[in-house]
Length: 402
Image (tube, rainbow, N blue to C red; front, side, top):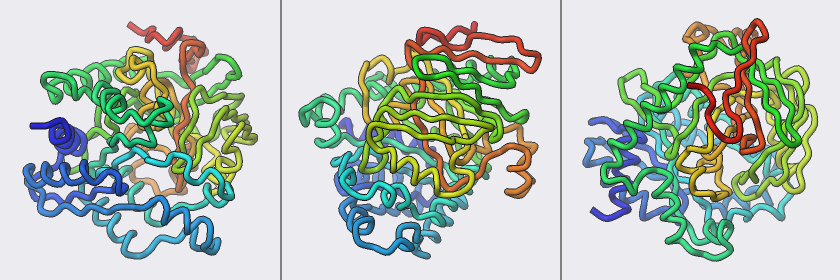
């Protein structure tokens, strides 16, 4: 079996855990066709009833942002909404990352770039994720343009090697390696859950931020089980232990430690100021208007939905590379997300509440969920208990809990 087929099998059998009789939905770019076809073959081998591959063209999206009405920027075609609804109700959803033109939209009106999102279609995917009725995973395909951004030359083979190392494809038995890796992450989550922190404090150059945690929070990592028994890995690679913050409790400043690639534009030197849980100021050397537009999507977008802990022992971190791709960079170091929270990272007591009830309890609901990287060797993360007791979690890029 060649490398592409081995990778596709890992995505299908470990990432999405495709079940016999299931419909599989693949979202890809034209440059990803070789992997999309291999995933299709693997999914049918796993017993899929049907595999539906949808290709999106970044240049078509550019034309929309450039020329369409403001209303079209957030329009969701009914057939895309229905596709996502079917995927959310028991399907497997596989997204392929890796843009060939990472800064294709950088010269456009960044307010429009940040606004351009199919809100109703995204809402269906969020529903499937939060209700755990859909297995989903994101994996990547190396492209020449992505390699050019990372290495200064279109060395796709070098990027292939970095991806292979990050996802354990270079292991003799990648499936067994993923099981052991998941066990390690779940052990770390148990440590964090046992400590029952009330808040986290981040401190480093340009960063002095305290984030309150939802009382009903629980730490997750290494995969999530769906309502129908599939156990999927949402990101390949994944190195994080993550949980849900209180949407009303975040104060201070935070500086992103990695550039952030946002579908055709790159945000560099990002800095946020937060007060009472809300992002109130945004600064960046490039992409600031994109971020401000994204944060204006709805009233909850400027509030936090996730905190995730990753130390320097991660496979991605060990590559020493900046990938300019959140799938990888967020698994090299600690990250935070603004926007929607992840319901799986609660104790279940909020499950029966409606959206207003959840938000009243501090759980954030938004049409956006955007991760940005905040960790590294110079950033210390401290857990704060309800009584004020402090415990160092990560210092010098090393996990401190034993």
